[in-house]
Length: 412
Image (tube, rainbow, N blue to C red):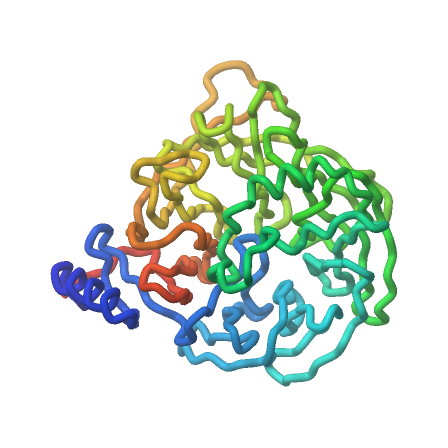
C-alpha cells in the first residue's frame, strides 16, 4: 500500500515521465486505482456497449494492434483479433466478440480463436449492436446519395490534426446541426448472424443512431433520433418482429429540456438516461420501466453530473465519469469518477403510478480526474462482480484503461 503523500509524488513523477504507474491510492479519495492495460492508445468500450465476455471473467478492450481480452482475475491480456477493426460488442451468450473489418461484420471466439465473416455491410452501412441471444446484429445506412457525415474531419483539415481517434471532434456541434437538418432518408436493418441475411425493419428521415438491443430480450431494440438534443425526441423503443411499432419513451414538457446517453439495466427492465430540466440547469438520472411505463428520477448536483452513467447488474449502485467546465453542466469541480448510491424519497402524498418517483443520488468521489483531458470521454462501467469501475483515461498523456476499486483501500 502507498501512503497518500508517496502516491501523489509517484503520480507527479509518472506524469512527467509519461509512464503511468500500475497501481496507486488516490490521495483525494482513498480508493485504489490500477492500470489494466499496457498498450499506448488502449481503450475500454463506449459506456453502453457490452465490454465483458459472457462468462464474466474477461474485459474486452481495443488498442492500435486490434482487440484484446484481459483476464480480470490475473490481469493477463491477449490479442484475439489483430489489425484495424471496429469493435461492436462482446456476446452475452457465447465467448464471441463482434466487430467490423473491411466493411463487413465478423465474430471471433476469444477462447478458441474461431472466426467467421457474417456478411458485407450495405453501402455506407454501419452496425451498432448485437441482440441478447447473438442471432442478429442491427445497424443503419443512408439511402440515396446524401452527404456522408461519418467522416468527422472538417474540410481541409489533415488527418494528423485530429488528435486521438477516440477524442470528440472539435466541430461536433456544427456537424450535429448540419446532419440533423439534412433529413436524409435512412434505413434501420438487421443482419442474421448465422446466414448473413439483411432485413430492413424501419425507415425514416430522422437521423437514426445509437442502436442498442435489450440485454435480455432478443427482439427489443432501443434507438435514438440523433441531433441537437434540445431539438429532438431522442429515445425510442421497438420490437424488430413488428409487434410493437417505434414508441417514444420521453416527451418534452419545457423548452430546452434535453435527455440522452441512454443505457439498459442488466435485467433489461429499465432504460436509464441523462435528463436536464432545462439544459444545463437541473440534472437527473431518469429511469423508465419498459413493462409498466413507471418512471424514477434521481436528482444530482451540478458538479456530480456526468457525461455517462452506468449501473451494477443488481441495480444497487451507479457510477459516473464527471465532466470538465466545458461540458453542458459547466461544473466548476466535476472532474471525478463518481460512485452513486440511489436513495428514493418516501411518498407521503398521493399514490399515483403516473407520477414520477423522485429520488437522489448520493455521491462519493472515486478518482481525481483533474489531469484528464475530457475530449476523451472516460466511459465508466462496473466489472461483473461490482467491485471495480473501469474507465479509460489520458491523465498521463497516452490513453490506457484503468479501474478503481469501489471499496476504500485499507492502508496498513
